[in-house]
Length: 157
Image 1 (cartoon, rainbow, N blue to C red):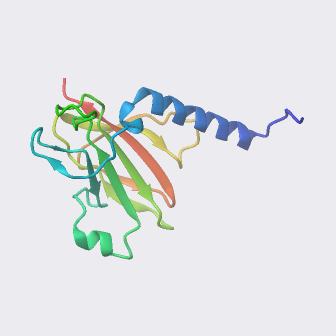
Image 2 (tube, rainbow, N blue to C red):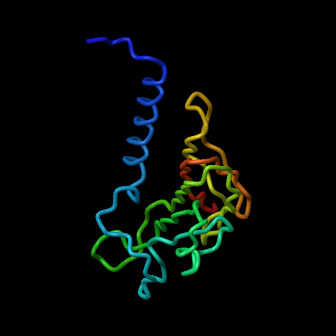
């Protein structure tokens, strides 16, 4: 067995460790309830909202636009997390996926109860550089080609 792992292998190992830690730290990334994107009248929240690059909720036209390759998935931590009909208490997260071959300017959306987004992952940032940084609502983030980003909502004090 060759135990001499090249640097690329060590970077991948650190990245998987980070993903494992995030999944453990944020229960919303491992929910047992299927995210349906439907508005829950009882608690006044959608569990997941699909966001286009302008920071607005996706329309029906957005889903049929064959040129749209970058979108966000806003997972609302206030959504019902169990079979009990009450608000959840998880963190709210935004995952941005860019399948386009070029940079896409993505506007970070506003969200109730928050003041900014903290970046946890940008697959284009080397793991030897700090990934965490805060971004205000409405800021335009340059999402590099074929990358994934993960943000967590920073609550107001």
